[in-house]
Amino acid sequence: MSDIVTQLRARRDELAAERTEHFDIPGFPGMVAMVQALPYTRAVELVANAGSVPGTRAEVAAADALIAEATVALFFRTDSGELQPLREWLEPQITDPEITTAIGSHGGAPMRFDDRLAAVFGILADGAAKVVAGVLPNEFARVSLGRQIKDWIETAHQGLGPLTVGE
Image 1 (cartoon, one colour):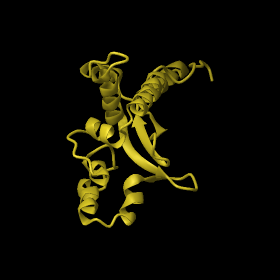
Image 2 (image 1 turned 135 degrees about the vertical axis):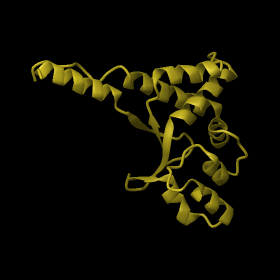
Image 3 (image 1 turned 30 degrees about the vertical axis):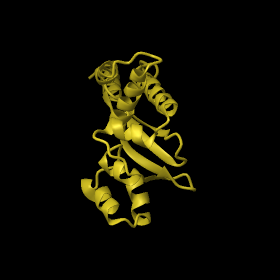
Image 4 (image 1 turned 90 degrees about the vertical axis):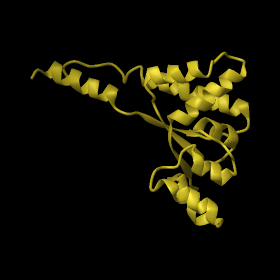
């Protein structure tokens, strides 16, 4: 197989690979969301379904949906800078048996903006986007985080730098 064919196939695999990035959760020092670059069509669908019009509540709904969908795990940054899964960080500190049961309800799955986080915050919410809204009541913070994630997703899909032939 030629060198260029090998490079092109490797680039295709690189572009198709799952990309993740970490974002600080506004208002909660140490809480970090690991987000995954959603496929373009899914990101556009989320925004369209929220009826995103800048300057309106639809923009907030679009941000909530994007944050909820793109977040694949929540972490806590320890004093040493290490990212510890939020569930592992929370479990030894929670004494309420109902919350402890809720946190363990998804087996070993990473904690996200889901019913487990809703239980920790005492939020009655059906759906991840509503959990985002309940945990982050500041709409400006949600829109800002949503824009950061959207901008990162866009650049994550633009490529990985130039393809160099013959290296």
